[in-house]
Length: 193
Image (cartoon, rainbow, N blue to C red; front, side, top):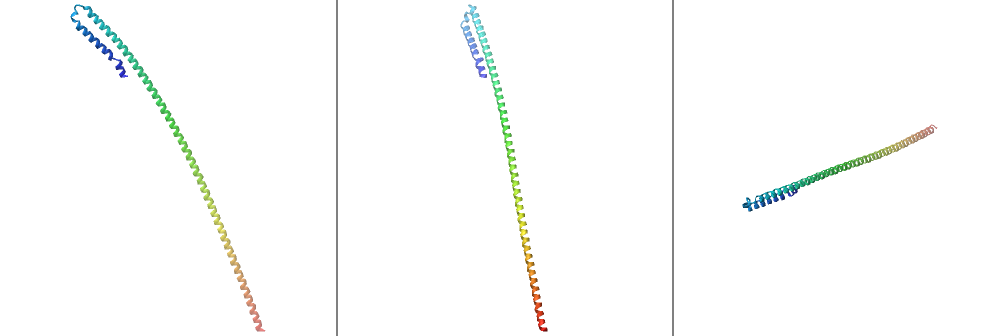
């Protein structure tokens, strides 16, 4: 915008004014000897110079006003465009922040769901492990009880066998004693006879 102001501003009018002054000086220098003889020509030159300067100044002012108006309009448009871009950037930033917050919330919910599922899975696995351990302990206790029953039955059978053997041995001893006593009695009876 600064380049446009300099280009539209004082360049051309300044050159025109300098050119007019140089032209006036040349005309004045060339016609200097005739100045006293013809005073009206100097007045004409001066009037022409004033008219030219006035017209140039008015044109310059109009161009400057147009340039200022154009510059102001461009500045306003640039400011509005910058404000619009800033609003758009802010809106995009807010949208990005909202999307990021939603993504984080979704990730957090998924992580919590996964943690709950993992905890439930671990709880089920622990319950299954405890159930298996309880079943194993119950089976072990049952096996131990069965083993004790078998041992007690075996011991009971052994005691019965020993008791039966002792009873038979006592009966056999008693029978032998009775037979021996009977034999001795018979022998004694034979001797006495």
